[in-house]
Image (cartoon, rainbow, N blue to C red):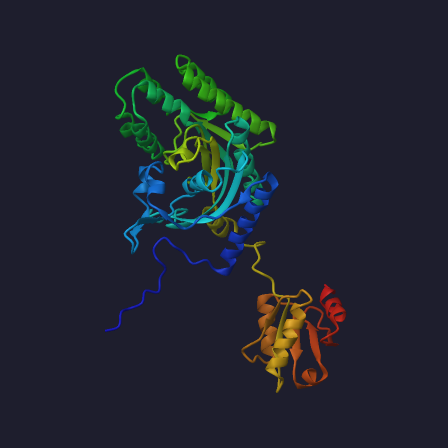
Length: 432
């Protein structure tokens, strides 16, 4: 009995049509342009990683949503749910002798078993910037700069940032006696807006009262930081975390970052490895973040590497792609342009037609070879529908004389040229 073949994609994993791929490639090109602009070297890690890479510090929410499986050797493996842990593994092992700082960039597919909804897929692409070896606030500010540059270059200039510092919350919890593992749980719950549940992990104390107030303070940087300093004046470590956040914002502003920046003193992110500055980047009218990141100073140690301060971000290529396709439109994001269609008419030689197409490609033109035996009227209609300007015709006469007939479908001018006269071919196609 034959089994029915499912024709739909796996839930949460999409096909990309040509116009969607054009948008995706444009976003990727922009990310790579910013890699080069700031000195980030592109790397690639495997889509499949050992489960242990993500077990310790990726956070409960991500651990619960990983695609895991056991291979034929009995090893527990995972489709990577995010990229920071694999990059930290790479730095701790294969790049441990590279001079610091290390700037790495990537474009990668990731997988999470989330409930599919707008902007949330089970397969998605990230474009990331990771900077290892510096604890300077200038490094954190650089991540804001590259994020600003990517969004501005794509054309999403109305973006804004939400920033915070987990150092304030972690230091208060540490003072109240909460272990790091429980701190991770509290921060993960705060990230999911489950504030009451998060606070239930903290016994009644002054620090808990302060945290209850901090999670309600968000807004303009100057006003929020003032409130934060007033609340945290008795906690030196938490105050220093605010100082650090303040300096990061000041440096970013000094470099020309004029994007709106919202400071949220109760801000947390789901990944458990963050140790300091964190941020997310938004587009007005959309509640989901299009970029996020922050400082993670202890991750390389988990993989046996030397202690390295680090900061980075993961730009949501798939989310930006979906936003552009659905909200902005794909005009201006062109699929690869075809210059000419070459048709073989009459009793012309297919071998000569293929040779002619190759010769025209050799002068730098993009040529489709017709393989459906179109007649001239159908070929012209096809070109008009696809925006192809030139129709190249070969038949028995052209094959005998080693020529091609070229018709400009805009001007309706037609000329016959020797196939081996490359300069003449080039001159014809350059007459735009």
